[in-house]
Length: 285
Image 1 (cartoon, rainbow, N blue to C red):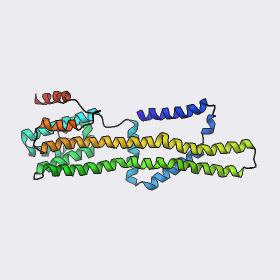
Image 2 (image 1 turned 135 degrees about the horizontal axis):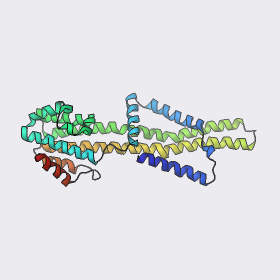
Image 3 (image 1 turned 180 degrees about the vertical axis):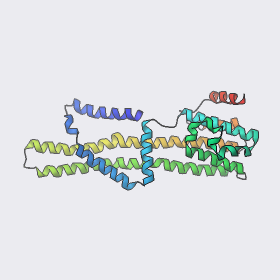
Image 4 (image 1 turned 180 degrees about the horizontal axis):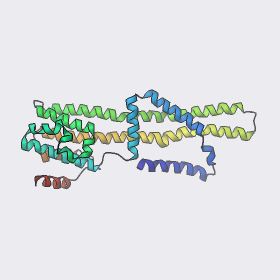
């Protein structure tokens, strides 16, 4: 929602200022210039991006319209889930985890957290790590290394949409110049025409430069930054899981392991100790 609000502010500030200075609105409405710039940018995106990544870019951009998927409730659900799973290992042993991690969609514990069940990569990250712990014979620091590798790979993949969009944003001013040059070429063909006609054609050409710069710095690059920050927030969720699971592997009890995870959560989304304590007391009852 904030993305839409920001876009409205950008449009309102620039176009509103232009109109307040007495500029005619029709001169800014140039569909052909938009076709040249937008079409060339889209073509460049398709040329530079693998098919699988194109889908991720579209999904990521649409995701910004509804706000980020990472919030305090996700973290709270994650901490609760980890505590319940950790309690199973404490009461019934590691072998009791198998029924939960082999088919999490059938697990009574995982069923309490539908939002986490929908995050397939997050779910695989957790269950694959628990499988290693159940197998045994792997030191906690080796498990941590494996989790770090997984997190790094996931983060690298998550930053690609923002990186590609940033490059397209960087190219937009240049594409605006291309549109302007084409406009000047057309203008030169009418060089013997009346001044009003020449002035109009030059104005149309300059609108191409304006649109390229405006679309780049007003929309594309801010959107790319938004995607980068979203990827960073997403990685923090995995870091929280790692902190809790490694603590359990080192032999800490469930509540302490979950506290390790809680402390690794960014302060904007971190549930309070009292919130977790209330949940733990409810589970014990």
